[in-house]
Length: 127
Image (cartoon, rainbow, N blue to C red; front, top):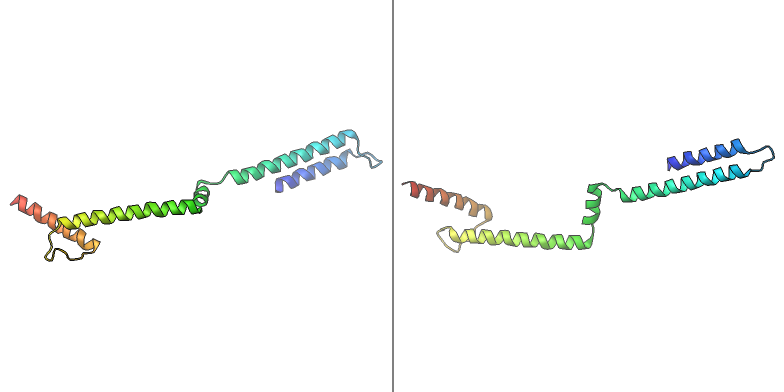
């Protein structure tokens, strides 16, 4: 925006310098002003295109993630991941001996019990 202002100012300065005493513009001045206006408008268009086209990687990522299609796909992927995670814990739980075999254990309890059971099996192998 500031750049186009200075370009316009330059065109007006050329216009003032080349005006003859009668207040009429000669053909050369008219061509200069026309070329300056074309330069300003093309520069402005390029700048607007660059402002729209040169988004940073993070801005492009944010815009892509803002779409409904992306959110739906992401929610589906996350659901599949969590289900696989829970199935893995269930399989690990089946391998661990507990006093009541059907006792409900939290994930951290399953992990701690697995650590203790692995340590016990190592002790049995060493003995």
